[in-house]
Amino acid sequence: MTFATRITTAEHQSVTVISHTSAITDWVSRYMGQWWTASDVDPGTVIGPVIHADVDEEQHAALGARVLAGRPEEVTYATAPMLVIRDGTGLVTATQPDDGLSYARDPGADRMRIVGADETAVATATARLAREVVRGQLLADGWQILHASAVTRPTDGATLLALGNKGAGKTTTGFLLARTGLHLLANDRVFARCDGEVIRVLPWPSAAAIGFGLLDALGWYEPVRARVRAGEQMHPTQKQKVTDALLTGDRTPLWKTSGAEMKPQFFPDQLESWLGLTLATEGYVVGILFPEIVPGAAPALNTAARGVTDADFFGSATEDRYPDVFGLLPAESSTKALAGHLAQLPHQALTMNHDPEASTAVLLDAVDVVL
Image (cartoon, rainbow, N blue to C red; front, side, top):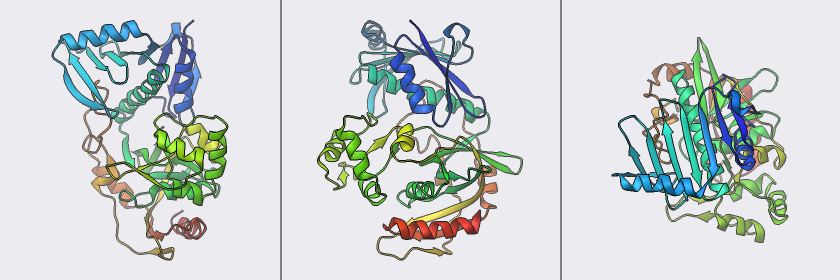
C-alpha cells in the first residue's frame, strides 16, 4: 500500500511525501502539520515537488555504492558526515553511512528519493528535507527568515517579534507570552515578507528546545517528566542524557563540550497537548520586542538602543547544520527592504530575569506599548 501526505503553507507552497510506510507520512504530518497544513492525498494525482521515502536497505546500499564509486565530496549535514556526488545532468546522489541513509535528487523532475535502514531515521530525514523544499519555494517567492520568536493575537493576527542576540531571551519571551493567551507562531525562526506596507509572517516548523531551568520555572517539568516516565516519546534529536535526567527527576542543566546546553526537545504538537499552548499559522507584524535576560536584575522596560541587524536574518552565512547539498534553495536576496520596514515599527526593549511571573508582567507592559 502507498501513502501520500501533502504539506502546504498558508501561502500555498507545498511538497508531497509518498511512502509505503504510513509511519513515515504520519511523522511528516506530525512534525509540520501544526504550523503548516498536512493532508492525505491520492498518490496517483500528485503534482509539484515530491519526496519518495522508504525503509529499504537494498536501495540504501545501492545508492551508497554509487556514491562511493565516484569521487564524493564530504560535507557535514545534520551533524553527521555525508558523501555527495553530482553528474552532468544535475542528479545529486548522497549517502550518510553513520545514519544508514541515502538520497537521490533529480532537479529536472523535482523529485527526491530517501531510503534507509531505520524507520525513525528515514522519517526524521524526510521531514527535514520536506521543510527544505518548502523553504526554497518561500525564498523564491520573496520570503526571508528571521532569528526571532513570534506571538500572534488570536483575534486579528497582529504579531509581535522578539529579536536579540543568542541567549537574549527570544524563546523565553515567546513561551511566556504564549502562556498569557497569545498564540505561538515561532520560538526561534520565522518567515517574513513585505507585502506593500505590511510585514507578513509564517512559521518555521521545527522541534522546540526548552532548557530545564525554563521548563521548571514555568511549571512544566513535572508534567513532562510524568509523560516520559509513562513511556511517551519526545523528539528523537533529544540526547539520551536529557531523557535520563527527566526519568530520574534531575533538574541540573546538562552541557555539551561545545558549551551549548542539552535541552528537552518537543514535537510541535506536544507544545499544545503537553504544555497547553496554541500555535498560529500566519500573522502580520505590528511591533518588535528586544528582550535581555539579566539574572538578579529587576524586570523593567528600558530605552536600550538595539535596532534590526544583519545578525537577525538567517541565511547561508549562519546555516551550519543543513547546507544546501541538494540545490533546493534559490540565490539569496537582499534583506535591506525588510530590515527598513521592520525598523519603522514600534519597538520596546526590556530586561527580564529568571522569575517568570515578574518577567511576564514586564512583557505585558511592553506589549501594551507596541501592540
